[in-house]
Length: 168
Image 1 (cartoon, rainbow, N blue to C red):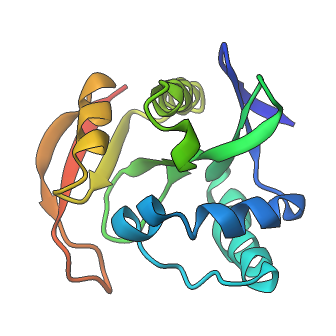
Image 2 (spheres, rainbow, N blue to C red; image 1 turned 180 degrees about the vertical axis):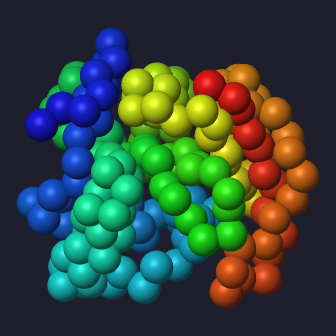
């Protein structure tokens, strides 16, 4: 089921059939460097991630990370969605694309569609977090109209992250 549609993209819930893609994405160098190692090394791990990550959040919050498909080839190219994290007062937007799809405007388009979706479901404020050295993510968040809003250290982590926010 399509939840968000933009000119070039479709965003839908992550399903078990997406496990091979999840395995690939979560082991991309950019994911490992800027998001972190989730320990997904096998198809079994990918199924577990889908169940305990996106599916659990859909059930708990009614939203979560969505699979991003490019209409051009109907293939999955990334994840983008809304996450309710411990340590953050507001829902935050997260995104990651396969390296082959970087610098083509896909992340901005997916994030823009996700912000519209957030408005449509009644959210009033969105935050975003990123590592201090993820300059492309900072640039994207600013392009989305998000403003720097200090720093945060999430529970069970020790890295200070930049925090951005946007009133919808």
